[in-house]
Length: 317
Ligand code: COA
Image 1 (cartoon, protein in one colour):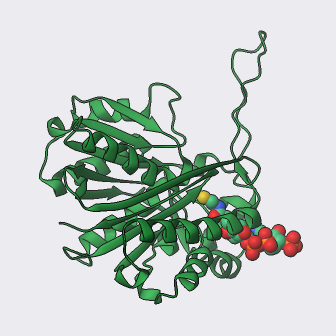
Image 2 (cartoon, rainbow, N blue to C red; image 1 turned 30 degrees about the vertical axis):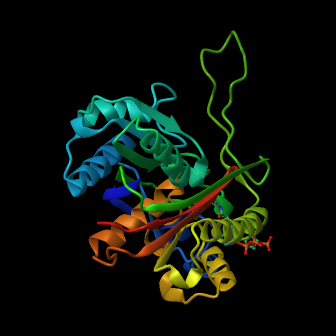
Image 3 (cartoon, rainbow, N blue to C red; image 1 turned 90 degrees about the vertical axis):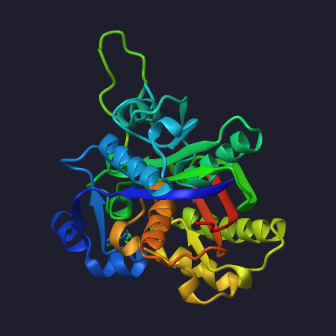
């Protein structure tokens, strides 16, 4: 499998730390030093479907394909307005594709999980061109009065088109069933006298536990895929890590003993956009001509579950 196109789309509303300080007991100083985030984009007038459509169309254009060329759509998404049908079904119609589509929820690790599934379809010859799209709106899961969580997240969408090739050198994905550190629970109580549940509970997170799990799992996943692909950290041009906290990125960087410039980030602009964070960063690097044919890249992510994943690939565009 290889990546042949990228695209992304972000909501127009930027919410700065200063704006949050007006509604919460927080400050730009606290958020910046603890997380690296300066602002995030939040869906207000735009919809998640519209973002997903734009990101997919841009990826198709970048790949030189049209929607009818797609054989499959894999969409990583945690929440959207519909429980069913899936976001990928809605997207399939909006972009004019004719292929099957599925959603998957591996939380912030969704991009790596989606790529892993796409690779299986391509390897077995069941598909030639696949749209992998990550579309997320964590802003709808957090309680905006809860400063521990709401300052961390932002909305966004990004896509890649993958096709036949041998650019992916090694994958490693894991699940450890650990709910407590990070979860969002839907209210599904049975009550024959009430017509519908009266809202979900907000996202619950134990930040310190997530932080420790994030660093240890990212370090071990990266080691694993470097070994699998018979490469060393020195061979890697860029490590694209899940954009959750700049301090997590720096801790992983220290373990790899690699220079800072190998760990590009945009968390300062977008916060944690869940599974969309790595493909948004990838699209930015691609559009800024920072990737050259033959560059080796590592993707590494972690998320609720606890899910983790990493892969090594060669840039071939
Ligand atoms: N503004 C100001 N103060 C805040 C705050 C905010 N937005 N959020 C928390 N605080 C306070 C806490 O209440 C605490 O106060 P106390 O000492 O009086 O109790 C203090 O700041 C320190 O909180 P603490 O939780 O120790 O901070 P931390 O250094 O662990 O950083 C996180 C908190 C959430 C930024 C950090 O743990 C983290 O990023 N964890 C990983 C989260 C993550 O990646 N989630 C997504 C996974 S996909």
